[in-house]
Amino acid sequence: MGNTLQQPFRTAVLVLVWGWLLFLVFTPNLLVVGASVMTRDPSNFIAFPLNLDAYRQLLNPLYLDVFLHSLYMAAMTTLICLLIGYPFAWSLSKVARKNRVLLIFLLIVPFWTNSLVRTYALKLILATNGLLNNGLMAMGIIDAPMQMLYTEGAVIIGLVYLLLPFMILPLYTVFEDLREDFLRASHDLGAGRWSTFIHVIVPLTLPGVLAGVMLVLLPAMGLFFVPDVLGGSRNLLVGNVIKNQFLDARNWPFGAAASIMLTLAMAFLMFAHRLSKRRIGEDGV
Image 1 (cartoon, rainbow, N blue to C red):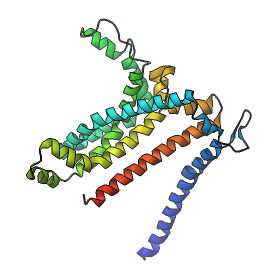
Image 2 (image 1 turned 135 degrees about the horizontal axis):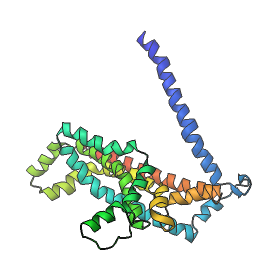
Image 3 (image 1 turned 180 degrees about the horizontal axis):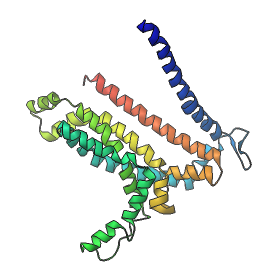
Image 4 (image 1 turned 90 degrees about the horizontal axis):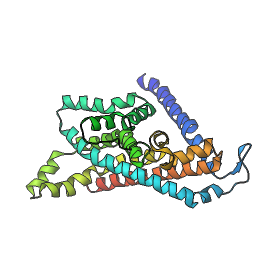
């Protein structure tokens, strides 16, 4: 009787999952791929014949500079998130469990507020007459307001603020699963703290590092509203280029080609993540 009831339920779940993947994941991505190899049309956005002009346009020095600058800012964001998130996640895994739940709760509370609203709140803090400048002037640290808004640094600060939890959470997961007997064995064999960190802890936590990089690097290149609010027109990300191509320039093939480029970059990071986990598994860890 139980198996008779479970079979229709299992079938319904599979149909629901595959239907969701087909209509909300595969089909939209196929439409983007199709648009990227079509011709720009002023009246209908895209038209035949098929060509690769949009992908050739990606090599235009103007757009290439934007992509490289965007990659630089995303890489800086990822590095800062890693430098902050790695010791934070390690410390979090050492806290007593009852306090750990509270800290994790405080970490995810910002997700309850829209990220665009939080970015505007950050703008009020970094503005010339904002909270940070007023506070520094009140303490006598600076004599005149600093120009922090509409700079590259403001964009990186905004990206770090929004994406830091995505680095901490996968790192916390691997630190929580880190076996203490491996660390004790390393010390028993004569390894110091630094040697244990380099040769034991870093390899064991590498999947978490790659997962955090994957969750931060690519989204950092696509959060177009952060440069719009904090960076001005001189600090664009790839997401700004894609948005402008679809909404302003009405060049759908080029916008789709840029989207495909980001998708392929994400696929590469996912492959690297799976490969690292497989290598660690083969080493018996």
